Length: 290
Image (tube, rainbow, N blue to C red; front, top):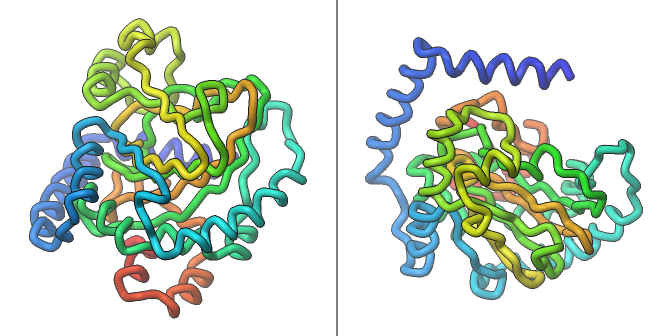
């Protein structure tokens, strides 16, 4: 609770003009300086980045990405799912069960998948700056009818632009709790009319601006991969009605984030230092905020 109060207070501080304006100025200067260092992408990866820019979302699959570490990711995931199934909700309003950092550390192949060179390249090209990788959230979303927090419309506040990569580990249909979003133009309109800063938005308010027929659901079979700029578009996890959803969410920000106090790795620094010994210099660089 104390940490939440502190974070909320810091978030308000970062809106103060004498702090926000210099930060935005430094952010723009950093992007200009780094522009010549951005990676050159393949045509498929550039399509992903362009879709993130234009719509805020790009749909793919593990098969299409064809990453070398995917078999290890899936093997680790299938071992971890039974552990989450043995956990019962501890609170009445708990709507998901998440793997602990210790469990992720026990199945490091899940964490390491997010450091694939292809993914770092996409994240860096999209963000326009060096990437900070916060790690994965391995979740089991419960069927309990709760429409709270991330199940309501919101925009992530860590950075101006972000990249989150969602991997469905089971088939997800319209009633299975799909990732939902409002494309960039609609999100920009809603932000302007609501005068959105943070918190969540109800269906009633959102529908008064963006008709429900324009809300997009990302449905797909196990292995579906969703790239989303959750720092600039309204999104949510739809309430699952008929089946639990198992998903991994990998999170990336720039190293010049809008709200740096929210940008935390899932691991302690000592763990990251140990892990870094087996990584390339570029992967190591992604583990630490500047």
